[in-house]
Image (cartoon, rainbow, N blue to C red; front, side):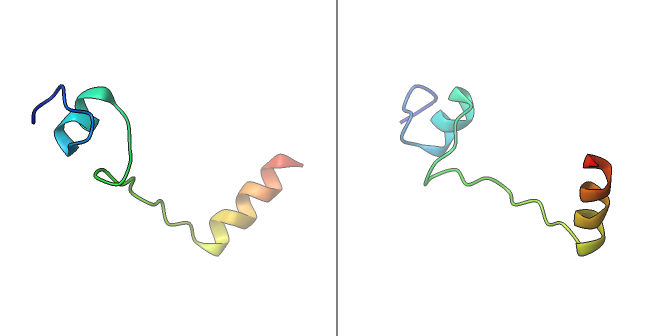
Length: 42
């Protein structure tokens, strides 16, 4: 149960992966950000 154990949180951090034990932080976007992103694509 350490850095070599991929099923644990510490192992996920060492391996650089995500999963049930290590969730990703969700980036919150505002409606104004979404409109600005759509304008840049055109």
